[in-house]
Image (cartoon, rainbow, N blue to C red; front, side, top):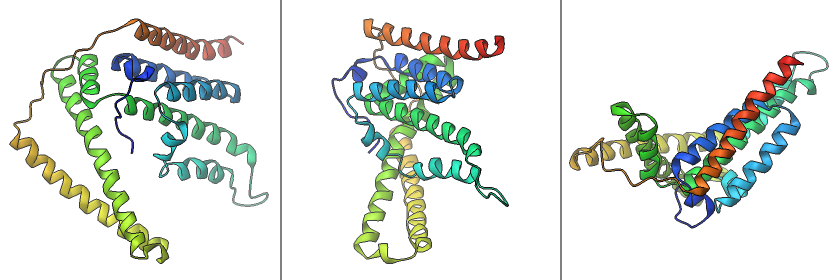
Length: 242
């Protein structure tokens, strides 16, 4: 399940602010370098970063199984035409590269969630956005990171229960309806319980944050972020000059 796992990998030892900066630099480079060569280089970097966080790329992608069909079907749909030749492969190139780029961003996001406690993410967001808006945004981030794994677990249990009752022999429409309605019901129930728990515990939007401090390895991550940002700026600039 896509959630924080304690560990001692290189990614676990990084400050959450440097990891957020690295993700921003990677996203900028991914949107700037849309060629096959650029995405291959970014793919190698994303896989290396995931392994450095003690997370298998295959295990990370397994958490996005619900998204993968859309990333695969989008280029195929773009290539379809209303008439002969019915399929234009050239039209699928750019959507395929966009799907590839999205997959790399999801892979890096999984590595971040795997290595970063919710409290540190909340503190990093509150540090990045000063004042009350930052504190409220940090509360939202913390609630999402805690609430989403529970919803994933509920949907997985519903699917397992459906299979145990021979639900896999039903039509696709019936399976989607059963899991969808059941998942929505569980989500509403958990939302009610969450609201009650927050009132009972007198939720504070300004808690004592965990200590955050940069180390030498964090400055290396910042340097890599600057390199990615510089490459994102230099790529379009070189194309404009040419």
